[in-house]
Image (tube, rainbow, N blue to C red):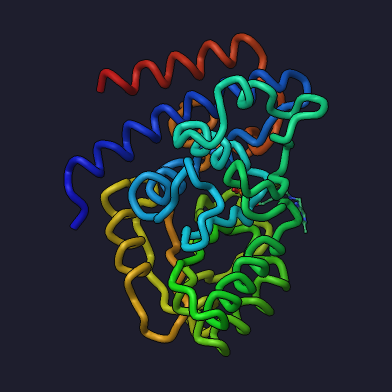
Length: 281
Ligand SMILES: Cc1ncc(C[n+]2csc(CCOP(=O)(O)OP(=O)(O)O)c2C)c(N)n1
């Protein structure tokens, strides 16, 4: 089981990351940002960067680093906030988010020296690249692991299933996918858009499946990720983590309105107040 210090560290980093998400997204002005999708993923990404993955911001391209591929690329603020907290990018660089000429675009653009492993944003593609990276590691006899964050709506993409079947065929047990199961996608709930049993689909594809009741709970995430990282059972692993879209900001939680949009001053003040209040609970 994850120790208390690590759980506390993840929660501390998650709180800081949520603040970065709000600051960077608000800073993008009228260009807006994908607030809801980033906020549901925060504990997942924090657990990976600050509890699970072998990586070194001082040596970002070290050969044996674990790889993180954010397939749900629209939620790039989750990744950028982790990169900022880990020391891959500076506060000044974070403040350029979505600005003209910034390398921190509205969807991740490959830039390994800053910890961005893969360009993503076209749903499904990042995951397929992650499967290829895991296969490459197997071929080369390398020990590192590949983690990929995938949206539940993203699981509607055909390329996900082509890649998923391929991962089973090649026994990619060095691959861990985490589904951010927040039940809301761009223009509706996952139930309204495509009412499928995601767990059954992944099991049918032959993956090693684990469902987390609360995918915003650091302790459960750390235990699940550690178990899957260490497993060499010949199957690729997937954690279906039930989360809340917009987690941490009361007026965004579970809302269909906060997939992507600009944030005004009043909303910014309310969001910061929510984050400040959470600290005292
Ligand atoms: C191939 C492709 N189709 C459509 C889109 C537009 N799009 C961006 S985010 C999104 C919804 C994703 O929903 P989900 O995977 O549930 O992620 P969430 O935002 O809930 O975290 C869509 C349809 C896209 N980026 N790529």
